[in-house]
Amino acid sequence: MDTKECRADDILLEPLEAYKTKYEGEFSRRCEEYFNGLLGKSGVDVEENRATVAKYDAESRLADAAAKRAAGQRSLRTFFICLIVLGSLLLLIGIIFLIEGSIAAGASLTAIGPALVVGFLLFVFLYSKPRIKRSSEEEKLHRTAAGEHLREAWRQMDALNILFENNVTKKLIEETVPLLELDEYFDVRRYDYLSGKYGYGGNGDPNASTIGILTGEIVGNPFVVDRVLVHTMGTHTYFGSIVISWVTYEHDSEGHSRPVTHTQTLTASVTRPKPYYHRETRLVYGNEAAPSLHFSRKPSHVEDLGENARENKVKRGVRKIRKKQKKAMKSGKNFTEMGNEEFDVLFGAVDRDNDVEFRLLFTPLAQKNILALLTDRDRFGDDFYMRKAGPLNYIISEHSAAWDMDEQREKYLSYSVDLAKRNFMQFNEQYFRSLYFDLAPLLSIPLYQQHKPHEYIYQDLYPRHFTEQETECSVNRIEESAFAPLGAATPSILKTTFLQKDGGSDRVRVTASAYREVPHTDFVPMLGGDGHMHSVPVDWIEYVPISADTDVELKHIGLSDREFRSAASGGSFCEAFQKHSKYAYGYNHGILCCVVPEEDSGFDKDFTIEK
Image 1: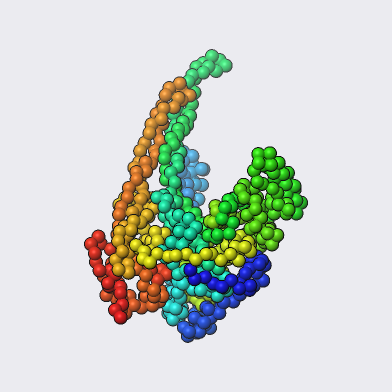
Image 2 (image 1 turned 45 degrees about the horizontal axis):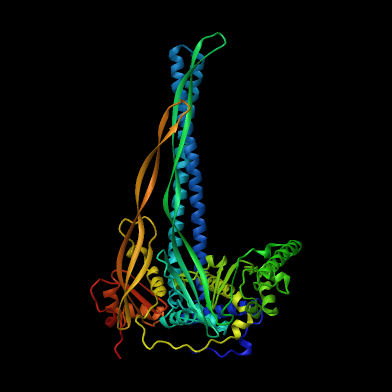
């Protein structure tokens, strides 16, 4: 296997310090330089765009102010109308009083009522209505002007927006941290290496579908970050209620019987199965160092503790570790406390099963690095789970749940140079930060960086071009309606079955599993305060499993997003794209994925450039 030479200056002896003093600033600088390069290439007049955006913002503010004034006037008009209704009622009551002979009260009300009606009618028509009309016209005028400026701003930005690509982030990261190599996509050779050498199992769970994937290596040692949509079956409690009433009789102090009406709300519940969905993100890293070691640790957010609280935590933890050590010695097991009590307690890998290999990994420098990560308040601190199972290491962090892994050029598109730059910088900086600190616990162990893997013999020919996870990720980028079963009321879990290798493409069957909803009503017997049983209706939903199969074909075209858009809109792939994209398609990281009919439609041949 081709790997980078592990030079001394490649090794991150202190990854947290390297991020703070070097990589964070350098990555931001590279992002800014890249954006400025695109901006210069586009020829967009920055000041002209800013002036147009300023006009758009000003007109939008004026439109919002006019809309606010109109809303205020409408509220005032409603209040006046209520007063008109009140005046009409007073007039009606006055007339009734006059008929019944209450001359004084009737005369007062018949005088006040019409005055209110006439006065507020004049106020509505002479004051509120003209102001509402004027404010509405002002809003429309400013909205129209704002729309014209917005269209002009988008036109000014066309030349820059068209230059954005989906694959920039990985290149910027590799340039910043030479130690890292990131793959364009998760190919079968990478999977073969992870599986054959380290025992990586991929995603065989029928209740989990890969919706995000990133692979690469650190000095030849491979890693994969996968995000899955997970389906679990749980329960949900539904409630229903009715109000009952009954009459009892009681006697007053004089002995007379009088009826008393009682009411009671009877509430019933039923618990029924319900599907739930959530996302999970994990990093899996293969390294042959310490191959017999197993351990796990979980976060306790020690970065939030003050100095005294941390010291007390360490003291309590040391006592537990020493008890465990004594117990292990009595039973003949191999467990001894580390010399660094703070590391031993805060890292918390007390279920380690190979003391020699654990110490081999966690040298004094590694311990120092880990403690620096755990106690760092400026970034993520102690927010990660870590598990080592032989040659495979698993990292699951809390911050990765919010990591936007999907590189999409649409995230940068804007009518404003400044907004586009902000979007570009924020996405890429967050992406780099999340990835770096998922890798940081592994980078904190110098032996992992120093250990180069042994050679691996790849197969000469693979039965398919794309891994199951990359295929799942590709189909999950296509609109869900392309695969969802008819009548589905829940998200679909998409799993793929490889059908055949068709030249340079793969034909795959996508099975979408979801649920349709069937409403039911149960009548639950409840004893009321009246001494009788009552049936309380409780509405609930039955979730019935349904599925649908759809065929897709995938091929690695290898063009950038901009190149592919050009080829598909009027270039070499125009005719093929019109033929195969009529159902649904996705294009990302050089891979085209199209929904196709069951019969062979010549997908591979149509997307092959004849040499």
